[in-house]
Length: 416
Image (cartoon, rainbow, N blue to C red; front, side, top):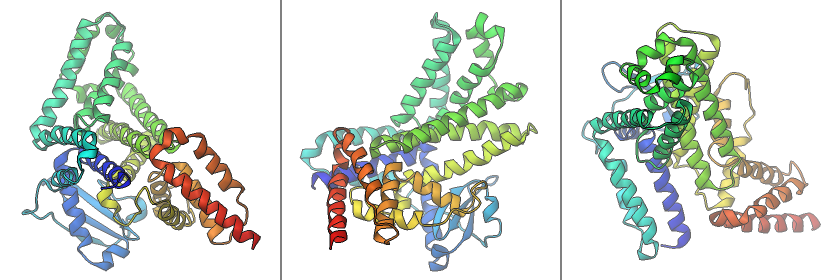
């Protein structure tokens, strides 16, 4: 295995692990089976617009929305897809319940001795993930996180705000490192963020006991304090947006996808708490908008970080293919961007599939290849930006080399 192939497989493994842990391993495996069964319905579904419904359990229904053959999992049918024809699929009861985990193991076994540090890291990561295939472990981890928060509250002399911020950073770090699944982190994150927005003298005077009272029934306390809960939803959502926007400005794929994975936790937390309030009649237009947008972003980020969903997209390290593919997708005209639509979804998917600078480069190379422009000024500017970051890019250096050759060929063709 070459170093380039090792890097690509390493990235694939990281994103696959993120997808497994974004919610919980059992759901990730279940969704994979549904996706495979959806695509097995034939070319009519692969190339068209469909709503594929399925039942997660007796009480919960979920969907795969297929737009121009691109599948996206969601718990709600978007307004723009309401008129799509529907089909129902079920997961195969005899399917391998650990197919994604087995895939990770098989890829790890492909690394040779030269890449032993990668093998060791991924093996430890998979061992951590493996234990969360048992659902009780997720509930246990959530309880441990809340217990640690209570211990910190009683043992520290810091202000409650400092304690909450510290524990929140610890929680997010564990999630980033895929030591805990997203489902174990959501309620603790909501509690921590809520208490930061909950103005109450008891917190200042006796944080430890107030916290212990709150966590006995957090949902009830969220509902009893709708104003603080609404501010918490807004805070979680805006934090997610800020992390997502920062990810788009990154130059390296490693940090880009790490940031997206982190943004996903905050979007899901805003979605959880916002939906809880709405379900209990605490409704306003801002809250509804946030819940709607948080679900859209959850779907798009899951689609972006899940490599199995991206079979028709190019490898990271093949810049010519990346730019050609991105150029075709971004050629779609945006329509009615104020309201989420298939075009809006495509646009955001493109934005969240690669860092922004690569999309900008793709558009320029696409315009030049289509003879929509003969100016290489913007392309040179983007190459300069990449060169300024070249020391940090390391594995993306092949992209810079490709662009330099591409620019030279273009300029020569102009002279001819």
